[in-house]
Length: 191
Image 1 (cartoon, rainbow, N blue to C red):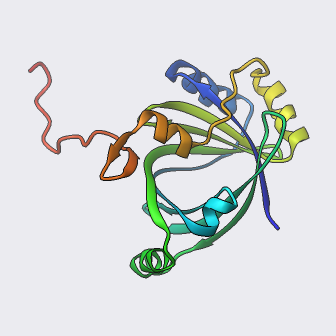
Image 2 (tube, helix red, strand yellow):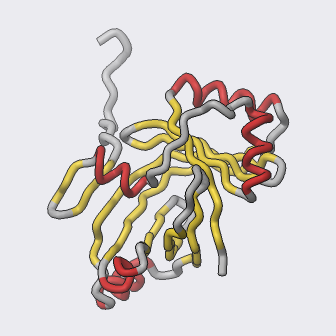
């Protein structure tokens, strides 16, 4: 069984810039940057197990993930996680629908990731704010906090789905947090 352990922090744009610079200063190798669309499905046995099915679409791939919360009494989130790359997105969506699961949450995210010692550090921008996550073993997360100088940083216990339900919009029964679409035609500077 795969257990994901992570700690999430609420940050602002200034802290995002500072952390990006700090990761560079500390020599953390940059892993990737992407834009994600996340589609979460609930219902049936998923609700009974406090779990979700997520389809995550990026420019390069789509993954299907099963996540089930494991109760903890600290700031570290533990989840059972199983993930696979999807070859046929439309067929996968039909399978999820035919199994009786319903789309409940959609959120978009810009993510930048670094490998830092034994952890992965990600800086995320969502339509409702900025966040950092550190994923790895608890002792490695604590070591990364010390090296980054963020031991006093405010933690965020809610996951992006719960935050989307709080800060997003309800559209046809689905909570959504999407970035505003930018016009393809930009006005010349000075107008």
